[in-house]
Image (cartoon, rainbow, N blue to C red; front, side):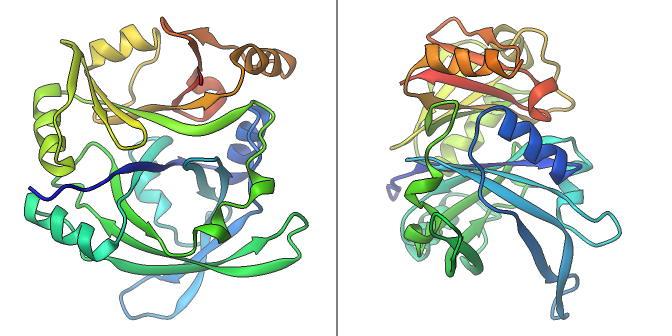
Amino acid sequence: MSKLDLQLDHIGVAVHSLDQGEAAYRRLGFTLTTRSVHSGSVTPGGPVTPWGSGNHCAMFRDGYLEILGIIDSTLHSSAYALLDRYEGAHIVAFGSGDADDAYTALSARIDGVSPAAALERMADFGPDNAEQKLAQFRNIYVDRAVIPEAELIFIEHVTPDVIWQPHLMDHPNGALKLAEVALCVPDKAESCARFSKLLGREPKDLNPEFSAYEMERGRVYVLSEKGLESWAPGVTPPTTPYVAGFGFEVEDLSATRAYLDSVGVTYQDHPYPAIWVGPEFTKGPVVSFIQA
């Protein structure tokens, strides 16, 4: 089996109102990029038109977080398919290096892997957003009928310097890097069998309800509903499978606590040196802050 170096690249959270999603994540202490409005063809080969959705991103030294949501409910958006499932985290993206090499390796492992698609958008650039530069990506998508646990993407960043700008990486909550994502599934053994085949590695079984895949950067947890209850007591999945949450390493956990206290965001302790914020503040997912 061909080895791929995989990095947890980004998580995408879908919200019914982008205005409300932006406000929620700014309150949580994330510095967000300027708003980008989506556009595209509604039908294959059709004209490119504005869509009714957009996004903001929070950029870290490693990885990023995307908040995507509706800004005009009268217009088309691919976000509706996600929101029909639930409001919350859906997209899990892995950095996988050269997209052609990644496609060759992934398509040999499992069905439902698409060839790399070239994508691009204009991005504000510079501390004052005085410039715009072209951001380019090559994305490989995995059919959700084959891997139902999340909207999975394997991505090659062609212009990383356009996306990871230094002034965007300073966050009031102290977040340094995207560290982990947790998937709640109805049958852990079945999900792990799929992920082991796709990712080309075996998980560490932390207990009967909780398994962990170590990437070259970042971790993917696969947990049962019972495992979710032990990890984030009181959080009920809207459905399964469900991207239950994600976490960030922070510079100083005590400073993160102090920031959340200052803005009135309630948090709870994990059994390890970390805290978590529940869905009432996050538009769906469990958001964890972990001592680096």
